[in-house]
Image (cartoon, one colour):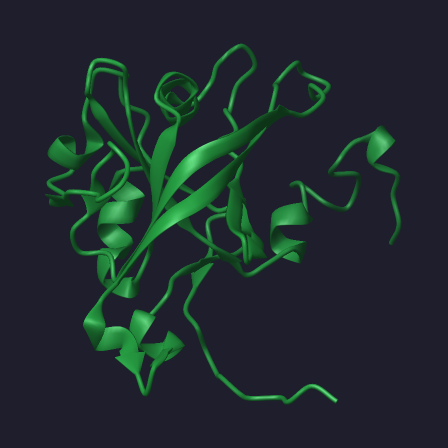
Length: 204
């Protein structure tokens, strides 16, 4: 089938927007931020990836689910322009999912979900203590995308990576062993995946 997005994102026979199922698997950024009054926030985002490895920059999209609202993460980084991307391993799956609940801005998700914190070195928000890798970031730029048909405004945050935490156990022969990270990936709808098969393919 083919359809123009100008005509809507789930024409017959589609019952849901297919994009999340088409562009996958996606890594999950478990983003910790902090409010102006010092309240920590933790939330997962699967619109996330590297922009550049050297210099190191990444992006994530803290998009709200309803028009006229914004994620607490986005509010926080607008006033305290720092955050930590904690990478999600299989051992953190249940906690990551719990932290996706919609809680009031004054609620600390770390505390509410029983997730242990560890201090960051170069930024103010804490990191997830159990994460096997965390990327400390400072906001480089925030972009507003055009509003959707229902008025919802989406955002793209580009962050400069200023510090990297890696668990010693995942480093083998001087390289990060992806298998040892046991990463969880986001698929379409409510589906998730694990790493699956790994193979090496040299470039020509």
